View 1: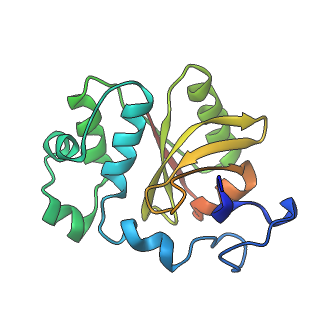
View 2: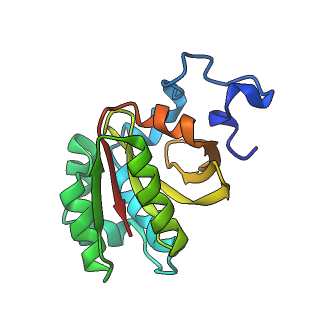
Length: 171
Protein backbone atom coordinates (compact mmCIF):
# COMPACT_ATOMS: atom_id res chain seq x y z
CA UNK A 1 0.00 0.00 0.00
CA UNK A 2 1.22 3.45 -0.88
CA UNK A 3 3.01 5.00 2.07
CA UNK A 4 1.82 2.54 4.68
CA UNK A 5 5.10 2.76 6.55
CA UNK A 6 4.75 6.46 7.11
CA UNK A 7 1.05 7.24 7.41
CA UNK A 8 0.08 9.55 10.24
CA UNK A 9 -1.54 7.76 13.16
CA UNK A 10 -4.71 9.87 12.92
CA UNK A 11 -5.42 8.42 9.45
CA UNK A 12 -6.94 5.39 11.15
CA UNK A 13 -4.03 3.15 10.22
CA UNK A 14 -1.94 1.32 12.79
CA UNK A 15 1.67 2.39 12.37
CA UNK A 16 3.96 -0.42 11.27
CA UNK A 17 6.89 1.01 13.18
CA UNK A 18 4.94 1.52 16.41
CA UNK A 19 7.51 3.95 17.80
CA UNK A 20 7.38 7.51 19.06
CA UNK A 21 6.52 10.26 16.60
CA UNK A 22 9.64 11.57 14.93
CA UNK A 23 11.28 8.17 14.76
CA UNK A 24 9.05 6.44 12.27
CA UNK A 25 11.77 4.37 10.66
CA UNK A 26 12.54 0.87 11.78
CA UNK A 27 15.12 -1.85 11.17
CA UNK A 28 13.68 -2.88 7.78
CA UNK A 29 14.04 0.71 6.52
CA UNK A 30 17.77 0.50 7.08
CA UNK A 31 18.27 -2.28 4.51
CA UNK A 32 19.28 0.04 1.64
CA UNK A 33 20.39 2.82 3.93
CA UNK A 34 22.95 0.51 5.53
CA UNK A 35 24.75 0.13 2.20
CA UNK A 36 25.14 3.92 2.00
CA UNK A 37 23.54 4.17 -1.42
CA UNK A 38 20.53 6.30 -0.44
CA UNK A 39 22.21 9.44 -1.85
CA UNK A 40 22.91 7.86 -5.21
CA UNK A 41 19.43 6.35 -5.33
CA UNK A 42 17.90 9.73 -4.46
CA UNK A 43 19.87 11.39 -7.24
CA UNK A 44 18.80 8.66 -9.67
CA UNK A 45 15.12 8.99 -8.67
CA UNK A 46 15.18 12.79 -8.99
CA UNK A 47 16.78 12.57 -12.44
CA UNK A 48 14.30 9.93 -13.57
CA UNK A 49 11.46 12.24 -12.49
CA UNK A 50 12.94 14.85 -14.81
CA UNK A 51 13.07 12.36 -17.69
CA UNK A 52 16.84 11.83 -17.54
CA UNK A 53 17.54 8.10 -17.85
CA UNK A 54 20.27 7.11 -15.42
CA UNK A 55 21.49 3.89 -13.81
CA UNK A 56 23.32 3.31 -10.54
CA UNK A 57 26.48 2.73 -12.60
CA UNK A 58 25.96 6.20 -14.09
CA UNK A 59 25.57 7.76 -10.63
CA UNK A 60 28.83 6.15 -9.53
CA UNK A 61 30.63 7.68 -12.52
CA UNK A 62 28.97 11.07 -12.00
CA UNK A 63 29.67 11.33 -8.26
CA UNK A 64 33.16 9.80 -8.55
CA UNK A 65 32.37 7.67 -5.50
CA UNK A 66 33.16 3.97 -6.01
CA UNK A 67 30.71 1.44 -4.55
CA UNK A 68 33.04 0.40 -1.73
CA UNK A 69 33.38 4.04 -0.59
CA UNK A 70 29.61 4.45 -0.85
CA UNK A 71 29.13 1.44 1.43
CA UNK A 72 31.64 2.78 3.94
CA UNK A 73 30.82 6.49 3.95
CA UNK A 74 27.64 7.10 1.96
CA UNK A 75 27.25 10.05 -0.39
CA UNK A 76 27.57 13.62 0.84
CA UNK A 77 25.97 16.79 -0.50
CA UNK A 78 29.10 17.80 -2.45
CA UNK A 79 29.15 14.49 -4.27
CA UNK A 80 25.43 14.74 -5.02
CA UNK A 81 25.86 18.26 -6.42
CA UNK A 82 28.80 17.08 -8.57
CA UNK A 83 26.67 14.20 -9.85
CA UNK A 84 23.75 16.46 -10.72
CA UNK A 85 26.06 18.85 -12.56
CA UNK A 86 27.48 15.90 -14.53
CA UNK A 87 23.97 15.26 -15.86
CA UNK A 88 23.47 18.92 -16.78
CA UNK A 89 21.28 19.85 -13.82
CA UNK A 90 21.57 22.81 -11.51
CA UNK A 91 21.79 21.81 -7.86
CA UNK A 92 19.76 24.34 -5.90
CA UNK A 93 21.18 23.99 -2.39
CA UNK A 94 19.19 25.39 0.52
CA UNK A 95 19.59 25.20 4.28
CA UNK A 96 17.14 26.55 6.84
CA UNK A 97 16.70 26.64 10.58
CA UNK A 98 12.95 27.08 10.24
CA UNK A 99 10.72 24.32 8.80
CA UNK A 100 8.25 26.91 7.46
CA UNK A 101 10.99 28.43 5.30
CA UNK A 102 11.96 24.97 4.08
CA UNK A 103 8.36 24.28 3.15
CA UNK A 104 8.03 27.58 1.27
CA UNK A 105 11.18 26.79 -0.74
CA UNK A 106 10.11 23.20 -1.33
CA UNK A 107 6.67 24.30 -2.53
CA UNK A 108 8.28 26.82 -4.91
CA UNK A 109 10.58 24.14 -6.36
CA UNK A 110 7.75 21.64 -6.77
CA UNK A 111 5.55 24.31 -8.41
CA UNK A 112 8.08 24.66 -11.24
CA UNK A 113 8.54 20.91 -11.60
CA UNK A 114 11.76 20.50 -9.64
CA UNK A 115 12.01 17.52 -7.30
CA UNK A 116 14.12 17.96 -4.17
CA UNK A 117 16.60 15.68 -2.47
CA UNK A 118 16.00 16.08 1.25
CA UNK A 119 18.24 15.19 4.20
CA UNK A 120 16.25 13.27 6.82
CA UNK A 121 16.88 11.19 9.94
CA UNK A 122 19.32 13.72 11.42
CA UNK A 123 21.09 14.19 8.07
CA UNK A 124 21.94 10.49 7.91
CA UNK A 125 19.63 9.58 5.02
CA UNK A 126 18.57 11.04 1.65
CA UNK A 127 15.07 10.90 0.13
CA UNK A 128 13.33 12.66 -2.74
CA UNK A 129 10.28 14.87 -2.36
CA UNK A 130 8.64 14.36 -5.72
CA UNK A 131 5.43 16.39 -5.58
CA UNK A 132 2.30 17.22 -3.64
CA UNK A 133 -0.72 14.99 -3.14
CA UNK A 134 -2.69 17.84 -1.59
CA UNK A 135 -2.05 21.16 0.14
CA UNK A 136 -0.45 19.46 3.15
CA UNK A 137 0.68 16.08 1.78
CA UNK A 138 3.90 15.42 -0.11
CA UNK A 139 4.93 12.48 -2.27
CA UNK A 140 8.28 11.00 -1.31
CA UNK A 141 10.61 8.40 -2.78
CA UNK A 142 12.72 6.51 -0.25
CA UNK A 143 15.09 3.77 -1.41
CA UNK A 144 15.11 2.30 2.11
CA UNK A 145 11.34 1.85 2.27
CA UNK A 146 9.80 -1.40 1.04
CA UNK A 147 7.07 0.62 -0.70
CA UNK A 148 9.64 3.00 -2.29
CA UNK A 149 6.95 5.64 -2.93
CA UNK A 150 4.47 7.14 -0.52
CA UNK A 151 3.08 10.39 0.79
CA UNK A 152 3.07 12.06 4.17
CA UNK A 153 1.67 15.09 5.92
CA UNK A 154 4.07 18.01 6.25
CA UNK A 155 4.33 17.59 10.03
CA UNK A 156 5.41 13.98 9.56
CA UNK A 157 8.09 15.04 7.10
CA UNK A 158 9.42 17.58 9.61
CA UNK A 159 9.49 14.79 12.20
CA UNK A 160 11.24 12.55 9.66
CA UNK A 161 13.96 15.18 9.19
CA UNK A 162 14.51 15.04 12.96
CA UNK A 163 16.97 17.91 13.07
CA UNK A 164 17.05 21.63 13.89
CA UNK A 165 18.58 22.34 10.49
CA UNK A 166 16.72 21.57 7.29
CA UNK A 167 18.66 20.86 4.11
CA UNK A 168 17.57 20.20 0.54
CA UNK A 169 18.99 20.10 -2.94
CA UNK A 170 16.52 21.15 -5.62
CA UNK A 171 17.07 19.49 -8.98
